[in-house]
Length: 213
Image 1 (spheres, one colour):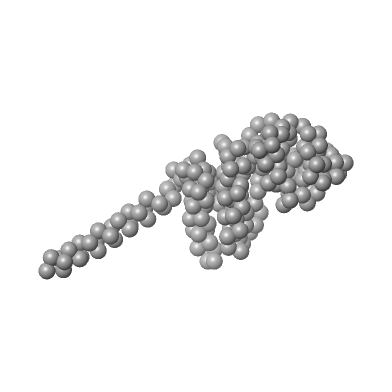
Image 2 (cartoon, one colour):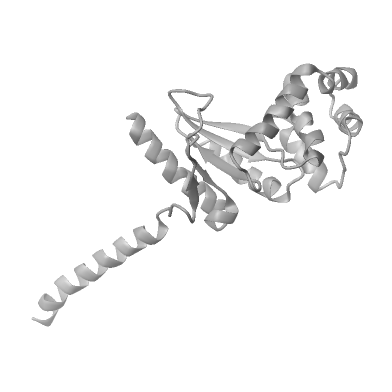
């Protein structure tokens, strides 16, 4: 008899606890992420874009990179991760130009992680294009081609555009993830690296639902 009376109460209690748990873990606007107004156009129409703002000199970006890489491999086909160098000061420009110079030579897929590692594990300092060229040569990159890429109009234009984009998003720090040009989250907002990726997952699911995918 007692068990019969308690069973509904236990069921109700478990239901409430489950609901509270879901509420507690749901991403909270203004806390775990902010809404970008007006929303920005993305470079991948028809897909959900995740824009990662980073800077090679940022230790937090370096620490996020392994988790981000694993996470990106599990994304649905209609979700795309786009790396976006951030520029929050003139001292950031050399490494931003390094990204675009290496990209122009098709070397980012191979050397993106190695450049992070050189800075944060090997103690290298890249304060000039020449220092990057010298290091890249040890990685099998043609120094003359990389030097020419650094000096190219295209690389300078992209680096200046990166600075402009950072300002347009009112970026205050890195790493940061922008979901579909509408929402910005970061480890500092979401309580850590795993938290930022969890929030990104929720916002991605929300955007996919809007796209009917």
